[in-house]
Length: 138
Image (cartoon, rainbow, N blue to C red):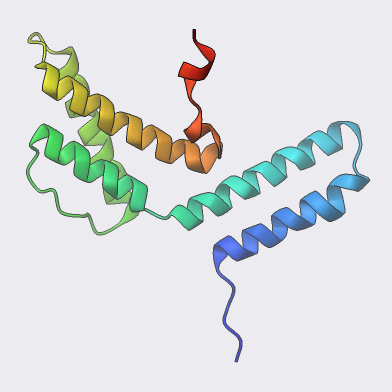
């Protein structure tokens, strides 16, 4: 009995088919739409492969940073999304509140948000998460 292919493997197969077999036959607007579809399939494949690990890491960091109770992992993905939405709102309130947070909090918030952004870039635009603006700015 063969193992069933994973969703990431299936998406990779679709992406290869679009890139190697379909794209060379396309021209004009249809070629552009095929490129967009191939890119979306690749993003979905990377998203499936990454799973909820990056979001759970962001949740844990923000929970610790904000001192929020109940830092345990939620049961489902919808709970995780709701938790992150709540945490982002709480962070926004803290950052925009009448009293400016101390420097240590600001640095920790920046670091947590930067890590979360780099995790998202690794899925949506691979390679960009390694971009170093310091190389371009004199």
